[in-house]
Image: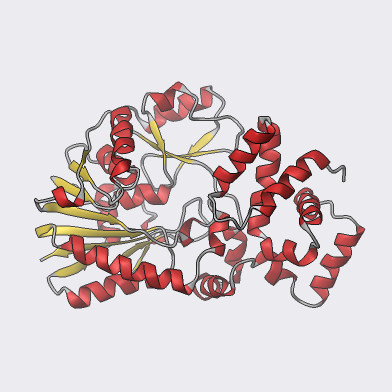
Length: 394
């Protein structure tokens, strides 16, 4: 293999910062700007850096230093290992550790969870690269028209299987954020699972509170799907309200923002998009697998229970409480809900499948995204793993 030493050195520099705790995309962009890399070279480094994060245990095992690590990553990525690396790989196969190090390159705690829930065959899916998915802003345009407009600009695409607004893009090096369709608010970037979670809302809702709104993605989706719902977004990070308002303006909708201390009224629906481990979006954020541990989950579970108790009181009698995570771990999902229901007898579960069938017409794939009464997506589709529970206040 012809090895690009210049780009290899930049990859090695990025790898040396891998454990610094920064967001990887931010860290890489800083390096790219400092080195004044062009788009093609940025892609070369990025693809191999994230490939490393997906197979970290293997590459750390067969590499002596940052320089050999970068070269080994490039060789395996290209499918052209040299004689030394080939011999090392053969030895790993002989002693039975190759699959554990390469295919199942996760912390032991997390790999055990994946294996027990889904089986060993799913590691290949967790290590695959997720495609970009868009949510059509139905307030402004139909999905069919947007799809054709994107194709005319060179963005090949197909429809999501269940969400009536989702468009899956084929891989491309072109940027969508630079086209006028984005500036005009015709779409947002949002995985199909997140779109479907927003469709758990009762269509008869008049007022909805999202207390963990972040940048407002779910609030915008609810506003697009249900045009008559008055949405109030809140978050402990009030500096995010500016972003929410800017996105709402671009989308052609109105979303109220309010600090926790300013929320006085009750709502028909409270939609909690809870902070979580992010285990369900590992395909998009492969480095996150190395930060998920039992201590982190214990702290999150306390916060999740606190949030659901805090905002359940904001649900009107006869209203609904929706709890969502982008995690597949039961300790963040079913166990949190069961604990809450055991302590709050005035709430009861509603079937997620029934609710989705009310809001999404002409679809029969709900068994793929539900489990018992819960919303729970599964591996081996072009969807992130998400969980949702709908609870009615009796």
